[in-house]
Image (tube, rainbow, N blue to C red; front, top):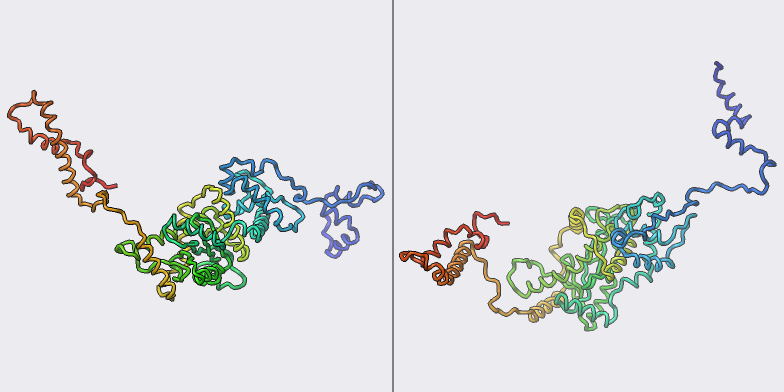
Amino acid sequence: MAEKPPEEIYISVVDEEPEIFELLKWDSSHTQKQHEPQHQQPEHRPIEKAKSPEKRFTRPADSDPFDLNEPSFIETYRLSKDLARNLCEELKPVMPESTKSIEFSVESKVMAALSFYATGKYQKSIGGRSDPHITQYFVSTAVLQVTEAMNHPSIVKKYIHFPHLRQERDIVKARFYMKYGIPNVLGCVDCTHVPMARPDDDTKSHFNKSYHSKKVQIICDSDQTITSVYATPGGSNSHDVILNKHAVRIDLQSLNNSGEQCWLIGGPYYTQKPYLMTPIPKIAKKSPVSPEKYYTNLHTQTHSAVTDTIKQLKSRWKCLQATCNKQLDPPTVAMMIVACCILNNICNRRGLPVVPMTQTEERLEVMKQKVANGPIPRKQVEDVNGIQARAQLVERLWNERRVVPDCGNAPRKRMSKKDRILESHNAQMSQETHQQPQQQQMHQPTMNHHEDLSKRPRILSITTPTYGLSMPPGWGHYPQH
């Protein structure tokens, strides 16, 4: 057996004879094609580079999402087929130009983005059918492009509009008053946290005591249509700070200074202002009936419009939930919030169903929001003009309240178990006493003359085993369900 040549000689052999090196690394047939004389190759055959698999991409026909039936399509993408097609047509003029060698259709990008919005995950299937071409890279690129197109000013102004004209404000006020009974309401306002990745800059303003997030301010009308969304602030900002930064505050202040009463309905995290009505502190459910208690009840019912809107928004678009993937940067998250608000308004106008949260999702969402917001501030700087405006509203609502006349149908005070048993027994005795003459006529021929008929119904009512059917559930030994 020949000995292995020295390393210097081995290298010199490869350097002097490159054919040996090629044979060691490449296939012989491939090597022969590379070293074929040029005069033996056809002159009309140009040398081309091998195309990558992506450039030979052809989308399979069976992966078209529009092949799904309508209920499955809505469940997967939250939009109906006609709304999805209309959205694709609206986004085509404003979609950013692709810098990649492969250009996917606008429809495929929009469908991939809708699927991500609805699930918060990078899907690799369409309607449950596997598609190897739907990669995570493609979905992430599509989400960025569609989100950027959805934030185009022409698209945002079309679907999210705050009532600036007097006629628009009057319509919104009238609908709030008819539905909830509070006048001069232009909207309900509240904030919610949407998670994001740890930012490179301005980390402190985006940390909300638990995780990094965007604190979104949402204003809606009585029909749960989002009329304003402010998704720029970080999670450490308070509710008042975010409202003071927004242009809506300036509009409301100007309207109230000009003599037109307009206000928003805010939650307990807000401070009372002339243009913002908040609940009165220290008013609980067990508080006695009073003008303040009456106002608090109406305020709670009205403010539920925005809390239900936020819950509906996050239930329909799970990418906004506090448990979704936290890999997107702050600007992308802010644009994604606006895009989901636009899509939510589109769904509401059509009356499409909302996919409810699971019990686990709802519980985690409530917990995450509670930890991020922290406790309600006890000491707040009170605005004298705001307190006076709220007092006037409380007095007006109390004077305009609907008093139900006492017609004898009002619910009585709840009786104890003993009283209910006695009342039921007396009612049964009275009923059987009325039936006594008929029983005497029917059974008089067969009865003995010495029987006391006045005692018979009483004895039957006590000894009959069917007392459980005629008596209301109030027995101490009966299980109460």
